[in-house]
Amino acid sequence: MSHSISGRNIVVTGAAQGVGLGIVQELLGQGANVVMLDRNAERLSASAEQARDDSSGTVLSFTADVTRADDVRNSFESARAQLGSLHGLVNNAGIIRMGAAAESTTDDWQSQMNVNVVGVVNCCRAFRDFCDGSGSIVNIASNAGKVGYPNMAAYNASKAAVINLTRTLAAEWAPDINVNAVCPGGVLTPMLEHVADVIGERIGEPPDELLATMVPAQLNRHIEPREVGKIVAFLLSDAAIIIRGQSINIDGGDTPY
Image (cartoon, rainbow, N blue to C red; front, side):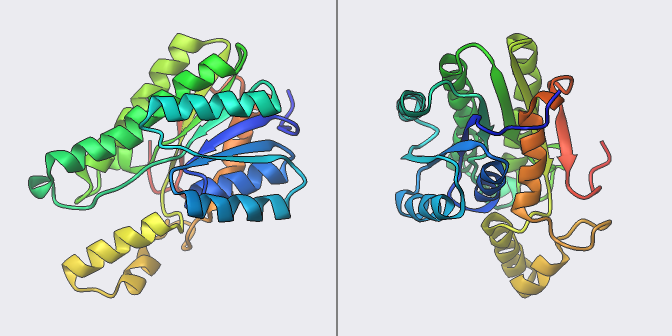
């Protein structure tokens, strides 16, 4: 089995920054063609242009809201028309709204569930229709979906749903479409910086000092987005064919199961 993803056409959602952009950079570095989806048109345009400058692979970008099924399908259809069959999907788009569970609103829950879970479903369905019968999906869950961190109840629940959804789709769509997830933690991204800002304000600690402590204990440093991309690239390759329906911790050893 080959570890190579060279020449494969792979869609990445939430691709304009953070983990998504790190994954894009790694996939391009390994020779894939990448379709970048993000709802922030300005940020997406800048990131896609930079990706094109840094790579010889084909980079397409489409402004799309993953919660809108028509947005997603139109983007996938355009991508296949330009590149041919789609071989891989990385569901990275996600949001977080921090706050104590007792104070969270219905809108807090609905917005996070809509992006983090329904958005994944929309993209998986579209991929199934445009991959010409086979391919690989990697869902970006989180160790929060296993641990359950304070002040993140809806986010935790949404990522737990992604973990279960991964298992379900792997069983339903086997053997043709392989579905797995990764559960990052301690990745240096704008989202982690936001978490540090909110918690720092709550407890009266400088956010930059708090951020510096939010690292995997065994590594004693933050994980870089492109390191996540390396694991994702492997799971998209033929070498991962016997890894199915799994949600793999990539948090530097913090989560024990």
